[in-house]
Length: 141
Image (cartoon, rainbow, N blue to C red; front, side):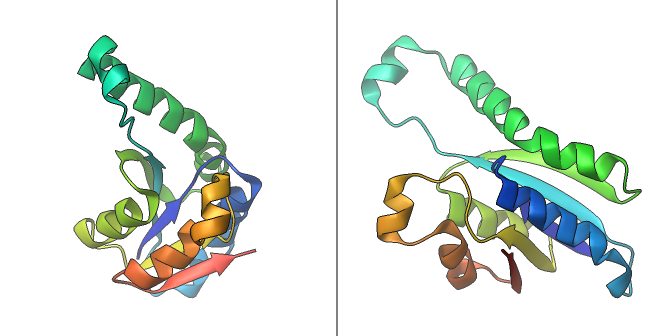
């Protein structure tokens, strides 16, 4: 069973990884976990005028890799097949699109991550994913 676990480096995201690991025996098929970190794109025209596309790509990859490291370490010792990916875009849309494109059957994610104050005012990423996702979403406190 292909499970998507979005991670942002927060303790709540790591709890979601732990939950996915601990429930692996509940599924008929062997679990395959896809870790995803969504990086918000740099939108300032001024920044793009001085930084190349390659530098931006490297920045997204470095930041995404840092956020994924803790989750990868947990999964490395679990015996569960897993992969890690970095996406660039609005978090909830990126998560939902990834789940659809990679035929994930479930999304397991933390209820709160390392989001900005804007997430408190506009609603959390988790709530948006619940509305956008094409598959069931399990929220882990």
